[in-house]
Amino acid sequence: MSGLTHLSEDGAARMVDVGGKIPTQRVAIASGRIMMTAETLSAIRSGDAPKGDVLGTARIAGIMAAKRTGELIPLCHPLGLEAVTVDFTFEDNSIRATVTASLTGKTGVEMEAMVAVSTALLTIYDMAKAIDKAMVIGEIRLLEKRGGKSGDWKAPRL
Image (cartoon, rainbow, N blue to C red):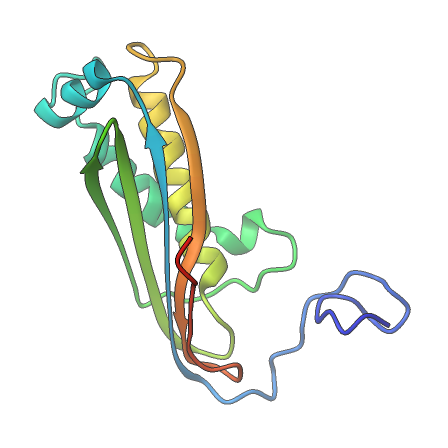
C-alpha cells in the first residue's frame, strides 16, 4: 500500500514481524530541552527546588520510561534494553537532556531514547512547576542511530 512498515497491505495498523531478523548491536541517541527562567534554573542547579533533587529524579524517570516504551507506544516491540544513560547539560535558561539507549536485538531503540528524553523533561517540569509554570519543552529529536538494516544515521544540523 504505502511502504510504511506498520501498515498491512490493506492499510491496517500492525506490529512489524522481526522474527526472522538477525540480532545486531543497536544504539540511539536523542535529546531535547526545557526552557525556564533564570530563577528556576538556579534553583535546580543548586538543589533548592521545592520537590528536591530534580535532575536525579528526572534521570530515573527517563530510564524507567525507556524500559516501558513498548507499553506506551502502541506498535513498539517490548525490548530488553542493555543500557540507558540520561545526561543533563545546563544551557542559557534551559536544561538539555540527552539519552543514549542500546541493546543487541532485532529492532532499533530510537523510540526508547525519545520516550526517555520526553519523560525526563516532563519530570523536570513537574518537579519545578511550583517556581515556573511557563517552562517550555521542545527540540525533542533523534540525533543518531547505529545498527540494523538501514545502517548508521546522524541528524543534520538545524
